[in-house]
Length: 105
Image (cartoon, rainbow, N blue to C red; front, top):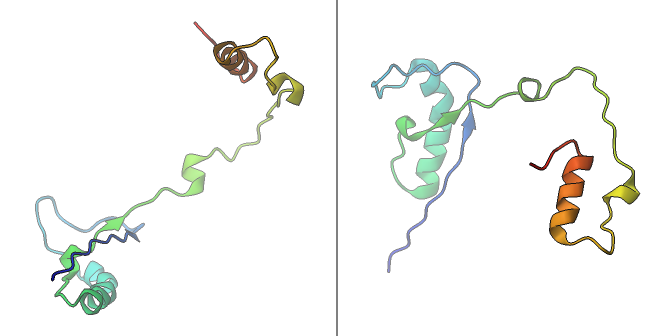
């Protein structure tokens, strides 16, 4: 009987990747940073996991995604957000889009 197990974990690396194009070698800094995880993974999976198998990621900071400038948000009257008895789903959705600043063409 054999057991097959797949797993994934991602490391955040805000530093610029030091891999050269087309080159699979890892820099000394990456090796120092990834070595403990490779060693742990090798013990966990009882397989030889080299540092080349460790994949990092570069995430955006909140400030890089969300505007930090002050803005005013006008919310609709909650009663306007309720469906009226004579509305079907399409008419309700169109009205809600207009309330929220959208349009229907």
